[in-house]
Length: 506
Image (cartoon, rainbow, N blue to C red; front, top):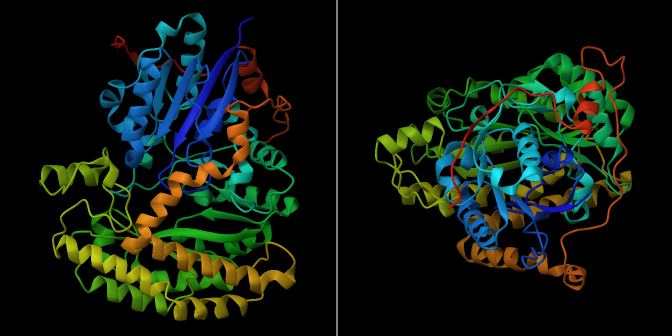
């Protein structure tokens, strides 16, 4: 039986935690394929080596580079498939550069694409919009194919749910996933079991891990037995429940990242955030008091924001227990309600996708301030919050909380917190200080070249043992048995038929 070579390529726009999207596709790929997953920021992509099928995942800020890469591969006769939130919103645009475009969640479509390819590569064409997969039938993501050691020991990716029950105007989650669904607990535990032995902490990449309280309660009880620290993303309402916070802390939760977005209540209301800014201070304190690091994400440039929003936000942050924050301008990704609104109002300053990276990049003309005021304001806020004096105060506060988890020997808690604070100060200065921004972009272009052995081997494919097959225990309450996964190994996932819009290859 002939074997085919498949490259799954991701084009991140920052050195982020690893994505599981491609690892999940690899898990449902037929065994006739040898698979390589390539993160182009952490590994040299060897274009010259023989490859039969390429799958590319990219978001809006890197989609132009993805299109260029797709064009290059297709010129060499390689079959190319593109997926991700950008082409989900604009599939016809993506189809100009690829043989096929996958919209939304990819496993069902990807399996069909691979099976069509095995019949004839020419059968892979058009726009694939399949029903979302039954998560109970999916095997764990092939994290063994990731270069895990290049992401560090504290951010090993785990997934326990998909989607978010909310519908914020600036978020693409509703278009990318079909409702909020959870994985069987056995699947999550299998992912943890397959982690490399040097991993010190996990990071749940879920949009909103505890959105289903019953599932979260069961998950935390299981994680407590694993005794591995982890971080997660959660809506702020979760942190109102002291019992849920206690369960999370006992399970090993070391960090909760929440999208607070704004201290300006009208901004929250207009974005459909369904949040009360007046509750934020208490919610954040409850997280910190529970022994968990509170992290907040903030967004600026909404129509109700004024030049004094930045000073009011800093004053609020100084009064809270937030130990980490991220700051960004509003990013109206194509396909979101915000993007359609600004497009109709002729307020998009640019449609150059390279600029849709957030932070201090302004792509929408604000209503109550100038673009320059927005850019200068967010730079001032980020650099003020991450000034050395404020960082020192947060370090002292964190060190004074005996309940915070240690990710190593207790004696190293102080140095670890100090190192984390120092890294955050550096990180947000290079993100918001133009000379350092240019320097960081140069570092990104050379980062992957630090791995000398890649250039010696000159291949993205590695010889890896096939992971052990797994099966959900029959007694797994409320979930399917192993039949779904075993059926997928036998030749096809249990999926609904999808629709494909055929398009000839140019």
